[in-house]
Image (cartoon, rainbow, N blue to C red; front, top):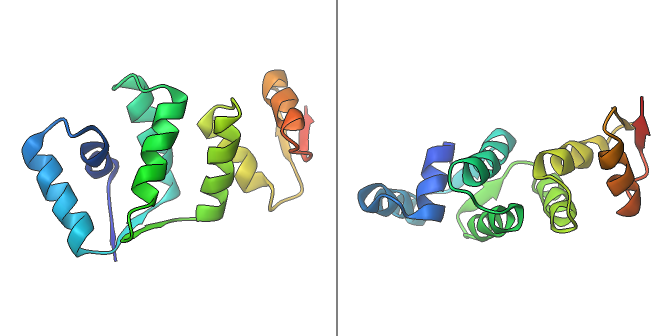
Length: 129
């Protein structure tokens, strides 16, 4: 299994460079590809900041990538939970933080809006500091 950098995933999603897109697609066809959490988070950031994807379009792009049979996503259960929370209106990075916190005693933040949205979505281990 090989680990793919964010730029490989960007080529698959955006197809903005024909040669690199073809090479990236071939990689996904021929090898098992591991996507670490750091790459998941960076992909979201790149798609939204550089390519102006909406939060939901970035989520859907990642869902498509994760559905490729040769792809394994690190902590896929946490990523799935974060994707669900993002579809409900939460920032993806915040949602990923909360998904990771579910395996621990709680999550502390100064962000009142995040705590309010988390509570609305049933995330109960969020505390305002």
